[in-house]
Image (cartoon, rainbow, N blue to C red):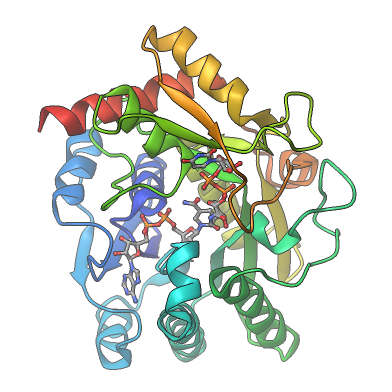
Length: 342
Ligand code: NAD
Ligand code: WQD
């Protein structure tokens, strides 16, 4: 019998890739999304890759009766992966209440329903943003949490605390917090990928749109940082590798023999820091396409440099980032070409 996993935000960027990996690993996926940042065509993409259409509900995780209906219709849900959230850092500064309501209420609803329906565990999408600018690099899971610089980042910290408190109070389910570094790239099939709406705020979609001629040039936000080439450093993780980390987390949580702690935290990154200028160079080299770019001033709120120590995930989850940066960038470029052709 297939185990059933509820995936919230299941048609989003990371949720869709994780759905594919879960289905390919033999899980039955019940997916929920309100299409606030995705659309129904993503379900076609998933089906093209795996041959299986997820059991999909168009619903808002903040809508308690709707979520209750999903749990009641699938009493066999054993685990939840909670991706659904608003994620635009800049918008969260303009509309903080939208972010607090959407990101926090949806988690509260889920945790309450999990307790009522006896769900065994939740995997939560956290972020390296909780570390701010770490004093020690690479950053480990026990590094101090820094004061959040945006309401979005604050919702990740608050949600981690909500989960921690619920577990300490004896919630009866397990939780794994995955702190993602910078997810990039797309499925090798180019049937699913990231869907930026409007002008992209993140580096990779802006870069691929510039390479495709949709944007005139890419602004590099600063070359006067204390890094080897002066541009910021991040840990770019291939989205398919990231999706596989969720399968590993679900396996660990649901395996009766694993005597794991009720709450565990893992960094999900490659362990390698890459600068903005290195990334542009690598993209140009592997695609043969030039990316017009110009150095401009620093972006407010940017962290100078951060990359993961992923050894805990490597050893405990048995998961490791596999794909090269070159192939990851090629997958992002193929996805951009697919979007441009539509
Ligand atoms: P995404 O916007 O592509 O996916 C989120 C999905 O959730 C979207 O399809 C959206 O329509 C849906 N959604 C939002 N609010 C909802 C609600 N109330 N009810 C139902 N559906 C709702 O984002 P993503 O990049 O796939 O991110 C997934 C998760 O990972 C988020 O929690 C995000 O904060 C976290 N995360 C993302 C990154 C990143 O850089 N992409 C990094 C760290 C953490
Ligand atoms: C990467 C690097 C920019 C755009 C954000 C969130 C974080 C997490 C991931 C969810 C930085 C530089 C970017 C551009 C540039 N999300 N850049 N020109 O800022 O590391 O993280 O997304 O949790 O919380 O803050 O990602 O892709 O925006 O930027 O030079 O047009 O690219 O300065 O160094 P970031 P990003």
